[in-house]
Image (cartoon, rainbow over all chains, first blue to last red; front, side, top):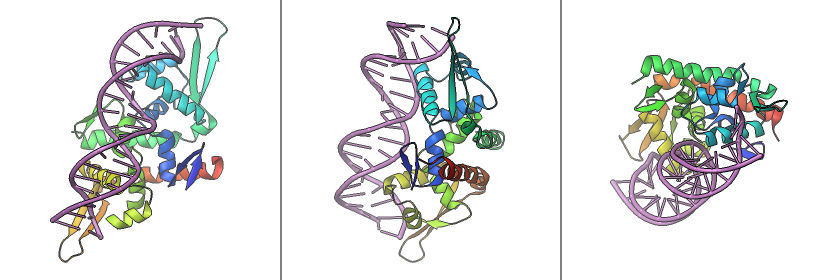
Length: 111
Length: 111
DNA sequence: CGGTATCCTCTGTGATACTG
DNA sequence: CAGTATCACAGAGGATACCG
């Protein structure tokens, strides 16, 4: 039994899925790999997610220390940038593998 | 937009998660890597999942062509063995990466 | 621009009992 | 042994409107 951020997981694989699982988190991380994006830029890349859900997922990822949120208030309009933390960067090879396997399926098994 | 088994995904990463996502699928696949296990052997390795859920998840994985189900009816008691298909075997490096990252988190960030 | 508030639906999962 | 049937529920996610 493993613990992370107060949650318990029966297996190392389920811990990973508890952090990056769900319908949207890997997609967010996929777009944030090696990049910094504003809220609206993320929205444009993920047109089928609702604002509410995107917002909630970003918050969860931030709470888990995977991404960081930087607010620029110097002058309006408001500007918020999201990027991976050092901890989040350790996920890059994994996210890449997830995306690669998806591509592989699309090319060879899509129907 | 990508398709697999009649389902649609907006991103290659979400396609992967659509197939192996959820609370239990990666755990099942983790235990089936390179092995063949009977239903009850899986249950013993995953004591916190209910029979119903395990059964449903196995069925979904079978429908997606990730695992195969082999029934031995020769003589009672009934014997059902689960193992990865060739397609499922292409997931092994990914499942291993997922488990490895989970281990890494447990060792370095567990709290 | 970058969200929240409110309300709602639906899927995944659980508990328990039962079966070929 | 290897499930299925039935019931129940929480929480993930969606729709829409509104806000600082």
